[in-house]
View 1: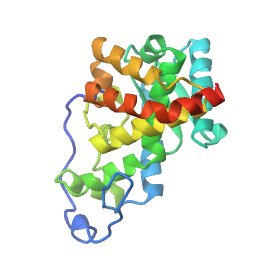
View 2: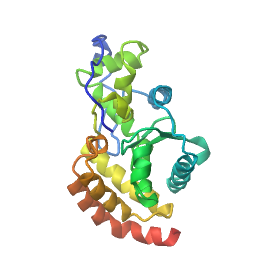
View 3: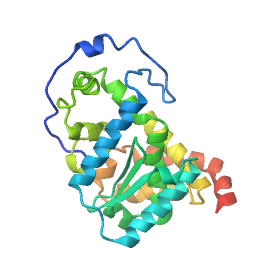
Length: 255
C-alpha cells in the first residue's frame, strides 16, 4: 500500500504516554507494548473503512466483485473465520494492491484483480488477512505510541479524535493507498503474515506456490503501491520456498 507524504497532525497530550508504558504484553512477533484495547483498534479500522468507502468508488464490475468475494470467503474459511462476519469490497483504481483492517474488512483494488490469478489473489488476501488475525495493527498502534508521533496517536485513542487525521489512521492500519502515507509492517510481521497466509490458502484449496509467482511478478511489474509496504521480495521468496514443503500436503488434501 503506497501512502504519500502529508502533514500528520498537531502535537499534544504527551502525558498520555508517561502513564501508559508500564502496561506491557509480548505478542507473537515479539513486540511488548499493550497500550490500546482491541476494541479501540477495531473502531479505528471501521472508521478507516468507512472513510475509504466514502472517498473511493467501488467497482461496477459485478464479476470482479463476485470473484473477490469467492476467493476471500474461501481464504476466511481456511483461516477459521466466518465469512458472513466479514465485508469485502473491490475499489476502483489501477493499483495492484489489497488490504485488510481490524473490524473484519477486506479491500482489493481493480488493478490487483486484473493482475492476479485466483491462486495469486488468494496469496495476497491470505497475507493481508494474517495481519489482522495476528493483531499486527494493534502492535503497530502500540509501538507507534512509544515514538514522537505516538503522542498524537495516544491523544486520539484517549478520545481527542480531532487531533489525528483519517489519513494517519489509515496508514497505521495498513490501508488507504490513496492517502500516500507509507507505513510498512515490520519484517517479523511481514514474514509471519507470509507464513500464515500460505497455510490459509492451502487449507482453502489454493496452490501456495502461487505466492512465489506473485512476488516475482510484483517485483518486475513496477508496482510501488504494494512493494513500498512489502519490501525485500527476494528474501521473502526464499523463505516462502522454505515453507512450501509444510503446506503443499495440506493443499493437495484440500484441492
